[in-house]
Image (cartoon, rainbow, N blue to C red; front, top):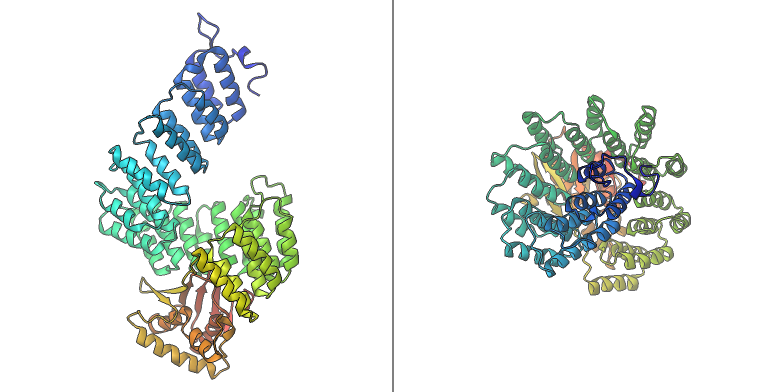
Length: 598
């Protein structure tokens, strides 16, 4: 411990010859050396108070900054409130601390207080205030701050404009974000990176790829950050060809050997369903970190290659690489997708009991265990597991159990779980849809109507299902029953032929996938034009025979489309790789890699 006696008796630093008080420079050095210890910083604060140096702004600034960096915001706020007329820089420091520690309401409150007492903000205030607004659930506060930015004439400051742009992307206001970007005086690589990354982080991958292409046309050279974001966008969309083109740009610019870029490329391969290419890259990487290992393990897991995932995890431990929380998510997911309950428990217990201080179970790990237990039919055990959690279960945990109840048609438990979910996450449409479908599956149409009425009253809208296919470095989107694609006539004609062919070898439409109270014939018509089927028909027409057809579905694929894909892969001798919201399905010669456990 630094101070073994009362702080006022600590004089081991050089003293001023005319006084017994340590000089300011000595305190500055001491603050730098103790920047990672909250307890020592509090002792220094006590010493400053007893020596009378607490009025020195430079020392207090150092102390406040260090406290915010360590996340001790309550003590930092106490220190700030004791200051006499703090400068704008100190207000900025406090706001920045709240933002960095994900306390946006507190950050916005400090800014409001700053505004009310007449402290003039500067160009360093607003980047963090806008960041705080982006972390809030609604946009109105961000809009008000934007007005202030204009009022103080700071709207053309690059840092401020960039953060406003990111905030608008986060709230889905792409028009405003693009306007801000387009009206920038100078759009450097930092501004381009911010826009592309914001699109990726908010699920607008196609927009991100579009901006990446425009950046190239504008003659702006990408850096490693650009390439990582672009590769991430390709992974989200499952666009392998575009991903390869993007990596070609990295190679041309000489940034392909960067481990961050290599990890992004690895992630892109596994999210496009090509674990063979991913493993080849993994084996050739000159250096690998925990992200490399975790990405490969998780990639095997979501692609249904459980043995490879668990084998690689074993090798990782043998080579002395410390797993992180993502690694264990991959391992537990691998067990869940294969129904390995005993193995899942073994890995979860190993994680919690092996002394990995930096890898304590998070809500995502508990959700994986619930999914594993529930999917395997152990619904009561999954429910009890949730009730015994040492942390408060979130919507993801309860949602995993609701999904399992739907699979096993346990309406009673499902109804109880849904009631809890509607309180925790009332605005998430998928939970209402699962419950509605569960009632429909057992013919309780009155309850279906009640759930749908509740959704309408609360303004909860069902997410539209769509599928996409990449062809010749372009991606094509399809919606169920839609005929807007330029090749629609050929697609529907191909689909009709396929349905006739697979029916002749035993395909029977699974009308249970239609959750509407209509006649069987009408149900067959509805499921025959699901987006996955349209995407596959398009792929058969346009994708060269030597390449697999890669279909990306934004929701969980239905039983009938899964069955349809198996039959089509058999009669056409084509590999179909489908990624839905849950996992990958690799269809080859009438068999799916999931072995019908999904």
